[in-house]
Length: 437
Image 1 (cartoon, helix red, strand yellow):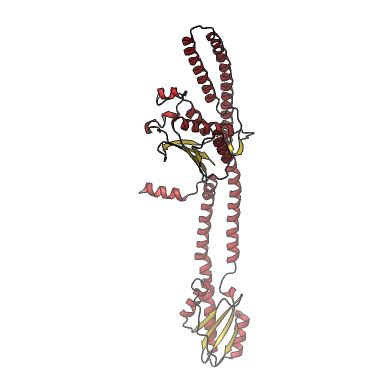
Image 2 (tube, rainbow, N blue to C red):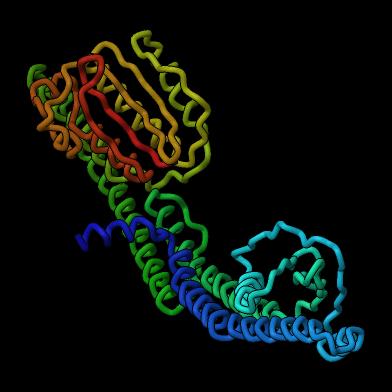
């Protein structure tokens, strides 16, 4: 039960660090402000209003009782209450009181005034909204009624607006400062994530300067050191492979020359095949090891790249469905080689190829369908291993050394994508490529 509740809470919480940090800062401030506000309204403002309203209604009751005394000078009573209690009173004789009273239950002033008037058994009508600074109160008396115009400050404390202003402004100010601070703290993390993503895709990183808090700077410095070590390793590997290429090609060339002097044509032909196979394996291995080491990333149209590849094959059995304009950032020549590998493999073991390209919100999906014999499900992972062959005899007849899919997977992975194999709608193999968009 607790695990499920915890999972629901996590799903409701924001995913980004900035909003999580803001939630941590803002939640206590908001809770504190709400608590202070409730305490203020309950213990101070409402009780103060209640006391003011009770005193005012008592004055109104006193006036009505005094006015009802036959021995008292009526004009003197009106003048006395006006000067001493700031009550503007007018008696409307032979006039009916309004019968409609809008019960504004959400207004603390109306609720307090209604409660106190009822407690004094007065027949009343009042309006607190028609005048900005006055309350219109009518009290039934004989054939008419008394109309009181009472300043609102006699019923409520005017400092409530100032209180609300000063309790809200600091909270907004603190949250604003927290947002600026959190934004500055999360920028280095976002920058580090972007640089890591670019480096993972093999893109060239011009300059990276770690910044932010001590822990973030330390992570940035460690990433920079790791990036330099990897670049140094790739450079050394490329130089080493260039040396191997030069050293191995020289003796192979000498062997070819020596084969030309062998009189037995059968022996010469067999050895020549072995030398050619060795050269092919050497070239494939060097290309596999140096994948993406030299080419830089750029923006290009992926739809045009795929269309141009198909046009160069001049094969009516290769069909591509309608494709929209797709701008992609990557290494164009490597992707061209990768797609060529997929088409070549399909043509080796099948006759027809159908290509589908879809652009989703975050991914580009490219499907290669063929009508060949396909690949057993148990071999889906093995076919991407270097030099692996499902059927050695079949592979050899097709002059393959087993590096095409391994190189292609390395190219797709270097762009942050992935490859999936499945059953094709044409009965053969479906090779699906995911590229982050």
